[in-house]
Image 1 (cartoon, rainbow, N blue to C red):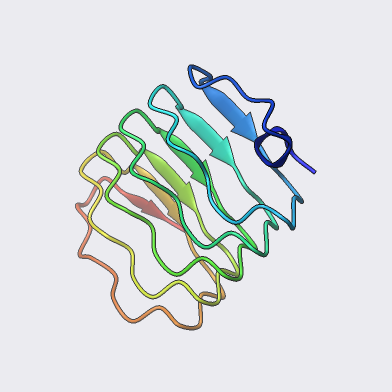
Image 2 (cartoon, one colour):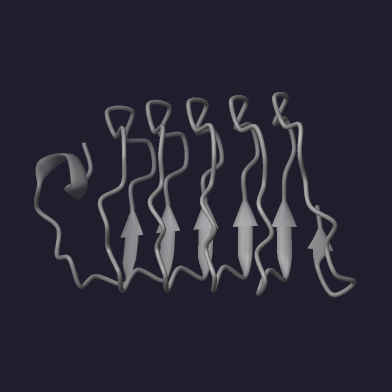
Amino acid sequence: MCIICEGKYDENMTVLDCRGCTSLVKIPMLPNLTTLWCIDCTSLTEIPVLPNLVDLWCTGCTSLREIPMLPKLAELSCWGCVSLMEIPVFPQLAKLSCRGCTSLTKIPKFQQHVELY
């Protein structure tokens, strides 16, 4: 169980690691968060708009259907997010790792500087 599920988190935190927390359903609003690891959080269904998020690792989040517009997101890894239906345009995105997202129907046209994996 992660600190979110236990209710032992600081709303001003900048890094959150919830790897392997299968009971995590949603991430609370954490306005200062810059890095989020929610790898293999199979019950995670939503991520809020996190205005300062730069790095998002949501690999193996099989229940995640969408990722909101994250204005500062620079790196996204979303391997195996089988329920993810679309990836929005992220103006600051520099690196995208995406494989095995079998429900993905919409992916934006990226600028030339984005590394795709």
